[in-house]
Length: 538
Image (cartoon, rainbow, N blue to C red):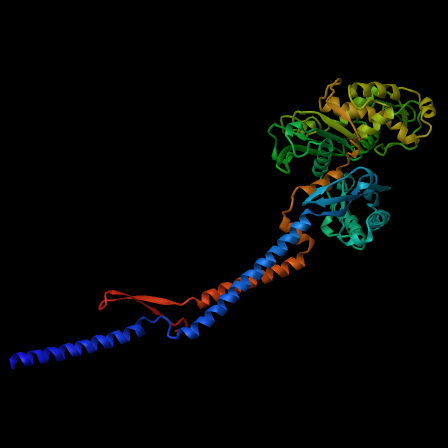
């Protein structure tokens, strides 16, 4: 009986434990169920979300491929373009109309044939100093000329820029602003693409750098080894510029780094305002009446007389120098050596104020000249008049030709060059002497130095600083394919990019929303981890 009772008790105990085990097993699926909904409810929802995500990614990828294809097509296609630069010089205003193509994101220029056409009007913008409001009207003929060259459908995308030089730099700022404002009004109404900041007075340094750029572009060395470049010396009407690659340490105000492609050039560039040929001649004429002038010899008679060594004998001056305080008469002396000395005195004025190691002209720092040089503008025009070779012993040839001209009789000269304006003809005596004083006596270039080449163009490309400005504006920063597309069709690209971003953001949000939020708990009773889902909104 006792054993039977024990067995019975054991059976009851075992039965209760089995019931507990069974109850535990029945509750286990509930505790381990990660998703309270049955699989029939969950599966379709998950599939739909996956379809939406995949569709969003596919559409975004398709849009991106389309944009890329269009951009690459625009990048590799050839597009014809035009550009206009107006050079506001001291003696006249000239418009340059450029016809070029952009291919594979790179501008290709043709400054020969019809790739560059120009037109000039006189006088220069600085002549409107007394009536600045009329300056803009002088541009009207130039604008109409540009419209004849640029197809009408391209007017709205063709940029026009006005860059004024030494003539305006010599005026006070208020007059400069009034002249520029007058020009801006005309340019804004031109139907060409224009911004007010595109009409400005450029520095003489920039003018020199632009001239250096076009010179080396024409020589085919721009973008290459700096040691293979050629310097440039310009002699304009109101200023002169000297620009070249220098290896010498320079004060920061004279050192300028220009980057073209992968090449970097450390340039010395400086503009010598008031040292242009025409202004220097005017200063010399004014100094003739000064008792302190070191450039002339004065002989006082009953009517005060001033000797002018830079004018051939026999020439009759129509007016007395403005610097004279009494009624003077000028006596043409026609002496090349004295004219050269007078020119050198002008070039060395202020040299005593030099604070640098080298001051070849006035108080301006000038490093030692390195490499070969092109001499342009009035160097070229004077050489052409005298029929000198562009290469060789240029300075010594100029000195001989100038000496012969200055010391000849005016009547004989007038007969030989009867087609020229008399005042223009007379000035060649000063021009020749000034060039020798500038290159040899000031810059220290030897008389027989063959590094100097006189040129107004190289390989049929004009050595005009405006071309250099245009080259730098279009080649310094080569845009990538995406920038090309942005510039050519920005509104469409922006719309595609917005859609692309929205679709990708939507796909990311959906993927985050459908991902369950879970927590992991270690069950001590079972000795294992249990994963359960957490309501994301709780």
